[in-house]
Structures are given as structure tokens and as C-alpha cells.
Length: 221
Image 1: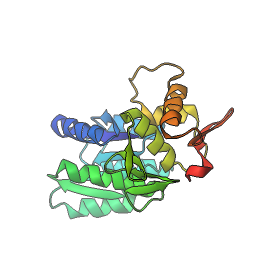
Image 2: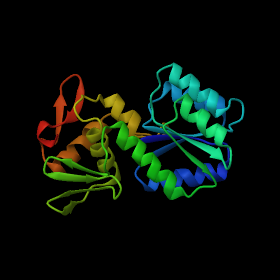
Image 3: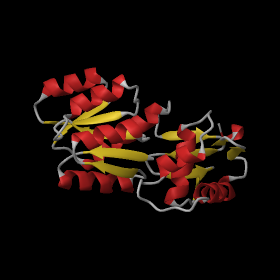
């Protein structure tokens, strides 16, 4: 699942990207406010990490614009130590959580994971999916306590569909959420990926709705 990192400090941005990528997310980057606002307004992200001190357009203004435009992706704001008024303003403007600088990367990853989980309506990092268990913290799928080996991309697809449980997801939406913007992929990449997941987890795990897209099978709900 894609996460936008809106941070102008290259060192912090790179470290966040590495940590989020290791946790199964696909990081995208914006280094100034105008770019962050535009990308968050026009692209699909499962979560956004937003620094309030961005150049050209501050994070609080960006957040208010997104919420006025009904852009509902979960937002984790980054604030400087001791600036409690920024934290209050951020929450009032529509932020879902905040982290104070300096921070531990593990904390940011845990909070982003929790935001995505709550957006999907799940309280725990361990989600029952039929006779399987999806552990979003360990990035693992198991059946009867036995891990099922999935590639990172296979895991991302299955986890994304679980978080979208109950609705049909188009191929273009899957592409937006599973691949980085500059990643070159074949036109049938999603179909091939769905086929691989079905072979590993069972044919009925992912259902095809012809002309519409895919959804989690009823037996997996």
C-alpha cells in the first residue's frame, strides 16, 4: 500500500522510506508543500506522513485543503518538539495522529500501520480471513498456525484486498495502491499477480467481477 512522505529533510525522508518499505509499504516522496498538496489531491494513497514545516506551502494549510476537498487518506503529522499548539491545530484540521521530532522510525511505522488498519475497520494487527490469519505487523499470512510463503507483492495485494473487504476494487485502483508511480509494469501485471495469489491461498480467495475488478471471496470474509 502506498504512503506519501511529505518531508523536506532528505535524511529523514530517506530513512522513513526505507523503514516503511521494509514494513511492506510503497513509499512516495514530496519535498515541498505545493508538490505534496498536488499529489495528495490527485493520487491515491493509503496514508500520508506530513511534515508541518514544508517550504512553499505549510503542512497545516495542505491538510485543511485536503479535508475541504474530501481527501480522506489518514494523515500522520510530524511536528517539532514542544510545539503543542501545532499538534492541536493539526488534529483540529483533520490529522489522524502525530509524532514529535525527533522520533524513532519504529514508532512512525507502527502508527502508520495502525492508521491504515483503522481506516479498514480493524482494531488488531491480526486479522482473521476465513481459515487464515493475516498478521500486518509480521507481514505474514498463515493457515492453522502454519505460515504461507508469499512474495512481498503477493502479500501487499492480499492485504490490500483484506483492507477493502466487502467492495470491488478495479485493476487501476490496485495498480495505484501497489506500485510506485515510476515503476514500469506489464499491462497484465495485476492479472498475473492475482493468479499467483490464488495458487498460493486458494482459488476462491479472490473473486473476479467481470468488467469491474476484484474483491475478497465471500468465504474469506
